[in-house]
Amino acid sequence: MTLRTIESLGSLRGKRVIVRCDLNVPLDDGRITDDGRVRASLPTLSALLAEGARVVVVSHLGRPDGEPNPKYSLAPVAARLGELIGRPVAFATDTVGASATDAVAALADGEIVVLENLRFNAGETSKVDSERGAFAAQLAELGDALVSDGFGVVHRKQASVYDLAQILPSAAGLLIAAELDVLDRLTANPEAPYTVVLGGSKVSDKLGVIGHLLPRVNSLLIGGGMLFTFLAAQGHKVGSSLLEADQLDTVRGYLAEAERLGVKIVLPTDVVVASKFGADAEIAVTAADSIEETPFGVSGLGLDIGPDTAQAFAAIIRESKTVFWNGPMGVFELAPFAEGTRAVAAALTEVDGLSVVGGGDSAAAVRILGFNDDQFGHISTGGGASLEFLEGKRLPGLEVLGWA
Ligand SMILES: Nc1ncnc2c1ncn2[C@@H]1O[C@H](COP(=O)(O)OP(=O)(O)O)[C@@H](O)[C@H]1O
Ligand SMILES: O=C(OP(=O)(O)O)[C@H](O)COP(=O)(O)O
Image (cartoon, rainbow, N blue to C red; front, side, top):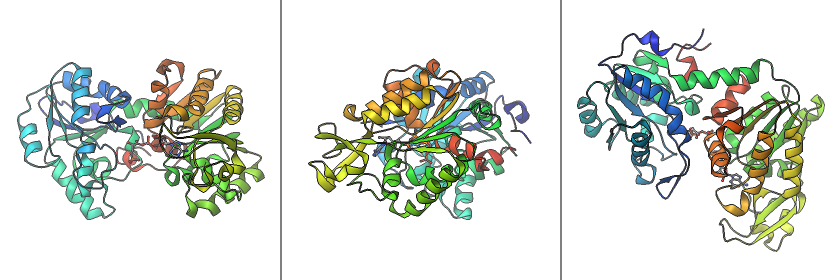
């Protein structure tokens, strides 16, 4: 079965349509550093407004743990959406309370409001079905229909993504449809050599994809925060770098499986080690098996792949016909640790074939480092979501919209 489309909801003029977007943008001191996810939400929102719907936008931002936290307010995002969409965007200071109820009641046809961060409410991410269901029921009071368009979050079984879609008449938005179009090309028949590049910091979330990818790819390049769990699994010391100690056996299993299948898991040979986490840290470039042998000893932190690794990764990427990349190679937000990510991004722009960048921070990284969207085959708004899609997993936020 394919996804239900917006048309399947019938005429939406005058209807209150909740649109579940993924407006989880990177912020620096309340300033949006990349508005790609806001821009990606525009086609669906504009289409609904043009049709005369009363649009109620809901989204999460960050991981505020079920409590209000001004650091994760969607207020700056609502303001940016107003600039991009070229019309007033109201903002409610809560998600299901009096502010939201009043703001939704005040909407005229063709008007739009953004509600405060869904994850300020514990019910949104609860693992207990009844708690999620109760929060979804409160959300449902605010709408007549749901358009689900937050591709970056379709792998999450959360109230606004999953439960709400079972209460209200629901359909997929234009962003989800466009994302699946491209990702289908990666799963259906990727042209070889097929290379997947993994990095970033959501290590335990994303390690699971490796087992599924191994039989499908020719090379798997590991950088970012993920690489230290691999180095540790090989018996190397990693100082104070990001490490998922409980995943070492899993990773050893992947390394053995890759060897059996003849797939290359390519690990860094050198690493940029910092004395502390900060742009003003002292830095040493060292071999990947000697991270604790810099002047910083065990307190050294690996924050980027080294220059030799960047060159080696770039060469493999350039020779590939299909490349999927999720997760920055280093802490690109700080200039001294951005070079690995820059080298990988530059190599992707030279791929003679299909190159796809996926993930909120990976997409932000390529734009912040000065690349243009049109230099890549596709920039996906979802990192974990696209990885799980490539894994062939059943994604709750798609299944509930009719995907099978
Ligand atoms: N070596 C590292 N140590 C700690 N954090 C890292 C490292 N390399 C990359 N990161 C961080 O990973 C984050 C992005 O990870 P993630 O959310 O998994 O990617 P995406 O949003 O693209 O899916 C960035 O904020 C970056 O600073
Ligand atoms: O940023 C996101 O995912 P991504 O980092 O995998 O691209 C989505 O907004 C999902 O956020 P979550 O991983 O906190 O559920």
